[in-house]
Picture 1 (tube, rainbow, N blue to C red):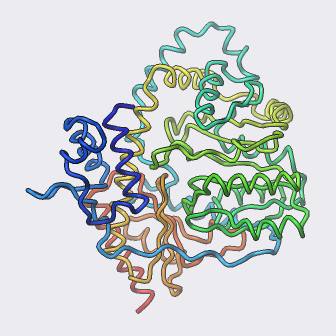
Picture 2: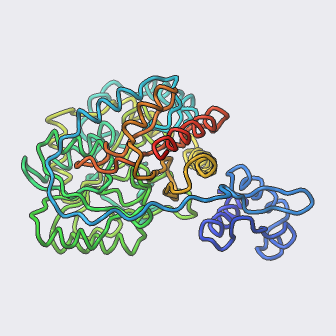
Picture 3: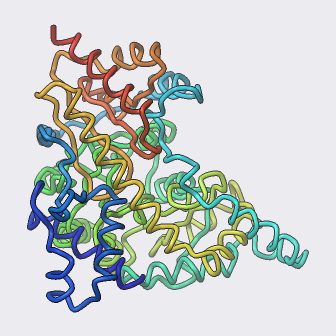
Length: 471
């Protein structure tokens, strides 16, 4: 990272933490240069970058000011009520019907699960694919199928080291996307009828996996900023025979919540006392806006209790379907189960990603991606404040590309979806994120696509539709 990028991250952190408030002037170029010991050129470059990220704006003859993303900022969603009941999961029909309605490529993709493909270096990846396929010895196509491509495993291990995790190479299992990793982990530690603690709201694929495996859910509420409610989890573990937990500790989908490191340590200590394994779904790990990357719960793992799952689908290569799991004490069981099902992800795709990680400038790409997503988040927040009812609540994640909206109680988000689709707009309604079909007045919106006049118009249209429920 260049000096001006580091300086820009320092100023961005002051903005996010509230030290520099909305509308407040940032240090002048001369003052910043003198105070931080950097050249005026470095300060200018940093401020240009912060402008591009949508965090500050220049005012003629006045300097730079923290941008007002929303003149009327919407409040944060309320904490979900306490939950304790166990639940059979039966949501697939609802989820499939909603997902089928989102496939039209001409709709405004607020309901999409992926950021825009325009944000990924697909041409550079294609060159890596072509080169590695040309140079790959024929025997490697078969030889590397079981364990995963060694260069890819080494590159993943190197990225783990940044967050203080040093898994042995034989603990890493390469999978066909993160969903296979998560499925395998759950199958290794549960049997049909077992209880699994999940988040509320939870990513809808979590619910579908539990339904398919005939597992029962224990919904643990999630605070939109702090993550899993540890008090509810503590009482649930004490009173129920929970066999596993499936949580996103950072940039949780759909809320965007991130636990701080102390809470992650407390979560691990709690699970370690009960010897309940954690399946840590961390597919958004690289999409943080903060200066430092969030550490996973896996960084506190002392005895292999955490199965940490990741993927390149959200940060680099959505169509390549390459994921992995650092399986801890369960790694061998996970590997054997994989061999009994899919055997191996595409070896050429693994080799291509390994080559890109080594030579393609992955960190440069990630910085550009994070900046784009942060800028687009600001655009959606500002637009929501302009067009949605004042009683609307919204999350403010420190990364990722989702916002969770809590509308007035009169709003039916499933009905809102049908109204929106008729106008060429998609969204993800709240009930698909709950085993008990709660959150009927909530929705998840995706800001991972470049913001334009069509996006703004879609928000205005949604705002009018939401108001119609309250008339």
